[in-house]
Length: 116
Image (spheres, rainbow, N blue to C red):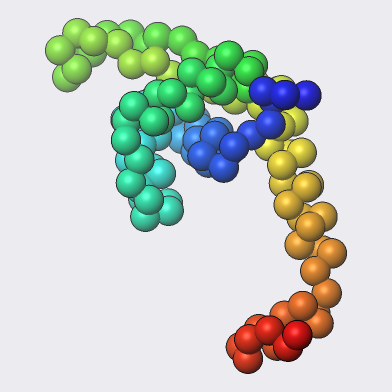
């Protein structure tokens, strides 16, 4: 079904939301992406992915209480839904299935270049 597949970055963001639960909010997610992968992500890209994932039903969000440390601003906290969990499981199953189909012969001549 179009629009429900996970892109690579969306999958990464969805996984990081799970890792950070219950403190999964935009800036924290961005920091964790860099920490876990060494990849720099623009905060706008993170927010766009979060919005897409929420509109697909893979995430829900709610505003936390305002804090003095944030100048009275509230964080939007994200949580994976059961549909989001199913999407991650499907993605993992597809990836594992492909990995399992690669024969040892495919790796045999890897260090020597193609043999054709």
